[in-house]
Image 1 (spheres, rainbow, N blue to C red):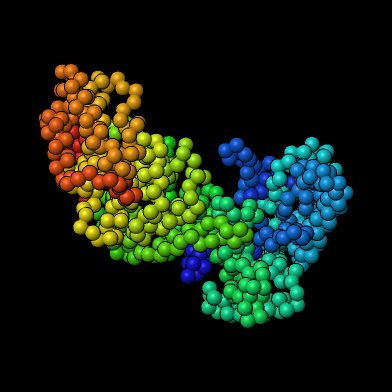
Image 2 (cartoon, helix red, strand yellow; image 1 turned 180 degrees about the vertical axis):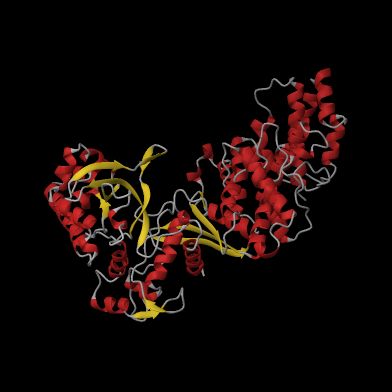
Length: 618
């Protein structure tokens, strides 16, 4: 199902009306090319064009259409008309050269470079006619025969190219900027070369199995079966050279005498299609991917829809522009309530694929396919669960997923998150399932460690609790965005009580306290309240005795025209007894009750606009 959906996406993009959005034809792929060597008709090197562009603190090449990369292992295998400086110029890579010298193997490394360059030239010479006689191909062959490294040194670019580690390709001067591999006489030969590459470097039995037609599991028709599938790049944490979804590299994985790709037969063209589609979705500049922790998530629709690109902005908001994020989420609410996802658009199938690294393979963390109307509703439900009254300085009522996750770990370091957590959260978002218990656990632990319940952490706790309540179909009411005085849940009431006692302490000192009871007692009060709450109630009497007229007025206002003792009695009215211990979910309720009560002290009773519900939302 996954490969079929990716294959259909490839076909859809190949037929896109916009030529710039069409995907590469069979035998080609987009690769980041760092340098282009410009040659004249005789093969003389005239200039080196640097195509690298800054990305953060490093330079990356420009994505260009080139012949599909060869499946490289530890052996020598060259790409066609493009490769790195080792293959093209026999130019040593500084780090490898230094390592070889340290081991006393410099001569072996330089000899290997010569073999690599020879393999590069042999691959070009093996091109069939008329590609072999093309002026551009002949110029490249002449260049390789004329000491390429010396030509490069004359232009003073040897050190720059060697240290960059980027890929190189060729073009003729005054050839409209197209690469040699893109010339009309060369391009058709690329397809034959790609098909031939599938049959190389294998034993006779594997060659026979690969060459024989089989039933392609993607297209459902007879076709030459791909022995090896193109590597998938862009999955965070996977090998930089790429990894595979379909791979059989040990005898233990084989069955019925079939080897490698024969165990999961996919046609050569179909394998190219699905890998090209997935690599495009995972590309660095893709607007249809979301990287959260170790989960690399991509999404696409059966038919083109702007929601494919909107989803990244909805869940992975730009923290530098929260106003735009608010507008986007508001537009989603309006679209759902106005019926924009009804009819044919809502029936459009939408796919979400979560991937994670697993050694040389890629693990499918989750896969979800549903009509677009359901996906949009799930995203809306996600923001509804996060909806929470917030301080005036919080501009974004819809916290991005990364911000929520940073609130759970020390110093906001996402690398500290448990493996698999991000994928489990994304799966819960799109399926409507309960959020992982680990998320609630991290949020509660962080509240206790920092003795604080900030906005993002409270929103995460509220979402976890509400999802669990709905899934369990219990009699407990889901938690509202604002303070709910009618909620009689003991842990929630205890959290409110703790906030009330802290407020009394603050006003008794005229707001000049460096530390409050929260800094000393929050952890114990949220986990073992029976051991702490009686003491805090006694301290309250001491704090009330220190109140001046200003402090009394501030408390009277904060407690909605109630005397402090009367307000405390109202909070405690639903409690039969103070529990000795609170479970993990109850500690989450305590934190949410504390947060709600604190925000209520600074909010007007009718401050509905402080919640995360946009205009027109239910």
